[in-house]
Length: 338
Image 1 (cartoon, rainbow, N blue to C red):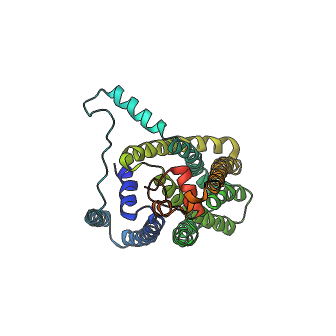
Image 2 (cartoon, rainbow, N blue to C red):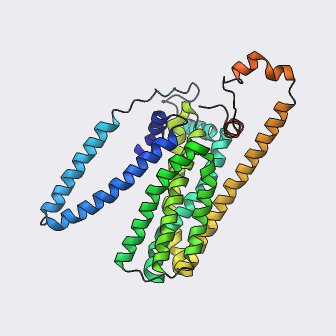
Image 3 (tube, rainbow, N blue to C red):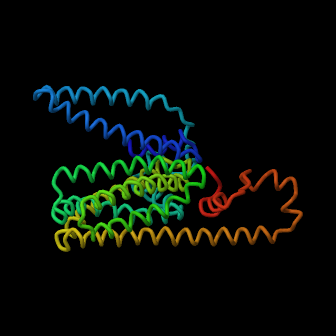
């Protein structure tokens, strides 16, 4: 339930143009807080005798959870519009499932985005068992170096959240996704050829940066494709599809590592990442072509229609006049702004 509600609450609190800023700040703070909490918790467990140490830690975690709930309950967002159409709650299960299927598949923009995102999620899931096996078996990293690599990846994530916010403010969020996905595809391929442990840590830092940027950009792109009146429904479908991939693909990744070894398995992860990048690049190319067609069609309109005060004031059927390329792209691909 929390995974389904989180995108709706964050989108309502941040608004259409504030997702990068709010989520980037939130996840950056969460990354720093997690690192500090893990370090402090580890020292605390060593300093206090057992079992009191774990008992106190559980008490602190409970208090933190209550505080988190109290803070979250202060977030005020607009009420979600209730969908007019759809079966009643008392309708048979089969009818409700058919209605859900028709609702989701009728939004082709959302379905295509989910399929592309599924490839990216599959690459992430495959890497989950492969990277630890690579660290231990292929480069012989001791516990200390595994900790350093993990810390470098976490530091890269915090840096990625902060820098992505700033780039999105200046150049728009759509400029972040493709470079981030390309880096996520290249990094495992490069890592498969590296023997030097500091080099692996440096690549981990890059993975952290690009993974954070891709996470922010994908979240923003997802929310632009979810209709406001069916936000909970589409969010639940997204969470079901992506988490199902994260259940299946780690098992496949372990089998691939057993057959090909860590280095060969990383190349498979890179191949899936490149497939995801290619899918998003193809969609972006089609979107740019649609923007060009829209611009050509607008240029062919009668001059009086283009420059009339009524047309300039209305800016289209939804009262919004797209002035930038990114806004026109959003209008063509996603429809009017939410």
